[in-house]
Length: 422
Ligand code: GLV
Ligand code: MN
Ligand code: MN
Image (cartoon, rainbow, N blue to C red; front, side):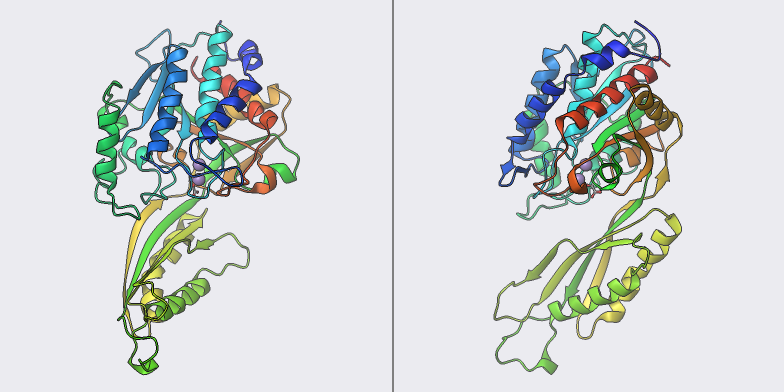
């Protein structure tokens, strides 16, 4: 069957099968409160990859990985030489994460491909489901390493020396993973070694409250706001907490508090569009009765307007240095994902498919970053959002209903059939 509409494939999407796969994945790294902690390149991450591969092989998909560990499941098209349509997301989670962020986009891709196969829908172009390496950036910062390398945005060895909290490096952990997955065929690295995909579509939970609050089914994502990440390190001097007079101290924690207060002023936005977060703080020697010698904290800054993000982000170092009373500090930028608007090709296809299925849609931007951000310059890109309860994400209570997720997978199946026959 050829054509832009694939009603049989839409009907073949199985809500129960998709949910069952998600719940099987959720066991890998399960934490109290229905959450998941599945850090990238951990044993749990590898187990989830093996599980995904076993399902893909059961469907006859060709499995391959690249040198960043990005994992691809390919359904061949009738014209295998054509650029594929790519869909997917990530399988790593936040340390206190939920069961849907990322993993649903991968499982939805598999579900959509399975539905197309079961319905006998043949596409001209191949369809590939991808699981990107390290989207979250919580074990190894920053996020989106797999997609940044695929897109040629950074050389693949850029993050080799990045360490996790135990001092293990990304490079060594990746090497271990690639060795453990030596049985899986290797492929070149994205556009560094080959052509761009024809299009990229990523399904994801919204991670915000709008769709649920407005009683809608599908978010037609039109673009993604920009994000910048910084590390700040404040250096003082360790001293005795009971004996050292205040005027002799170089207290890194006190200067960190001054710096964060000044950054709150810098990033204050009465409209609550500019988002500033300090999510990670490390203090050394981290002892109750010692003045802190070093304080490190992370900054996550987001805004949809490139100029605002540039101006405020570029001011961070000056503001931090200006706030210090006794210590010195360094500010290092680790991540810069520019805001962007998707080419209308994919959003239009998503909206058309959703409306044809009688679903209620909203055109919207993404506040979270996604691997789609780095695919945007390569090919027509888009995302499909489904509602999540209370808009909660990056928390164990993150939840989307089986029916909401099935609706998203049905839209994805139709969009893949449409794009892969263009
Ligand atoms: C992605 O996980 C983000 O932080 O936006
Ligand atoms: Mn995600
Ligand atoms: Mn996330």
